[in-house]
Amino acid sequence: MLLIGHELIPSEPFYRVVSTQEIAKTPPQAVVMFDFDPTLSAYCVENNVSFALHVKHIKELILANALGASYFVVDKGLALHAQKIADDYLFDGKVLLLGNDDNEIEFAASHAIDGILFEKGIRSL
Image 1: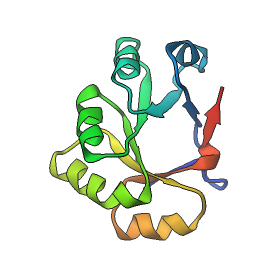
Image 2: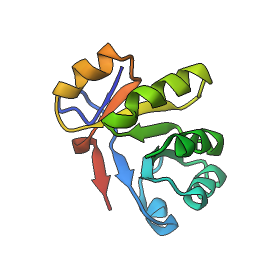
Image 3: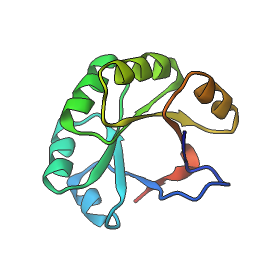
């Protein structure tokens, strides 16, 4: 299980962005994160930038996979369904539960969620 942003586990932060200008300001090899946006996704693919999409609906999840997202960030209400779809369709990207504390670890582990992105692991520019 991936634990991104947990205080005990070293990991590179994700950078929350809203524009191509902000993406350009992130460090090399950074993972950028934004709400579902096909235009920003295309920019990331063209520029070989790893990206995570915060998806809120199954349709966005399916499209995010087709757009080449490395990570699909989901809230708890969508996590189980998203993980099943990702497993059934053999998505290359990983489903990450957006979490705030260690209590999410047991939930994610019990339901075979790929990982958790803790809020502390997200930076803004």
